[in-house]
Image 1 (tube, protein in one colour):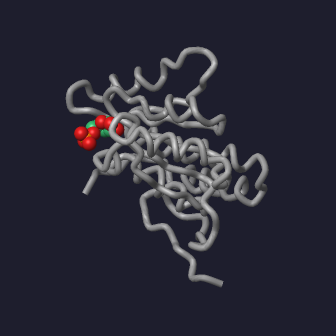
Image 2 (cartoon, helix red, strand yellow):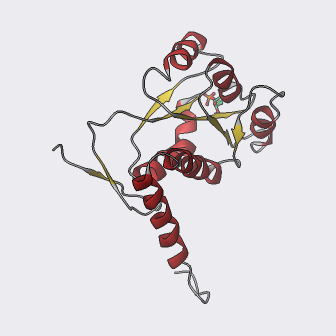
Length: 182
Ligand code: RP5
């Protein structure tokens, strides 16, 4: 067996991942600058033992890459796509227009408008092409991964159990009383 990768993050760990396994979640983002946000999605996927691939795919800078990726995503074995973008954030909607795989959109925070531009760009999809839109920034990235886990857990009881264990771990970490920060 190949060596396991164990996640090291503030997302906790309930699983290890075989590097040889086929990725089932694609985490795409419009720019390298989105990685600081989107890495929270991949850390959460790591913690749950979900195999993913992270790529930069820009709707407006690399449109051919977007078409190639989205057209081949299902055949490549992906079952859920997490797409993060900021500003005039076309990436999640364009991806959902090309593939009927579930697409979860993460609005990345922006300097100019704090990510409200990203949020409105992603959430206001016209009827017919859905994007499951998450919160702006880190919370959205983490929750996109958890939603991906919930979807995949519908047909993977082991993963569903890991998701429950992850949630229980988070519950157990909540102190009864507040303490002074160090
Ligand atoms: C979007 O433009 C990206 O998703 C990113 O959030 C934003 C800014 O990109 P950079 O100028 O930092 O590459 O396409």
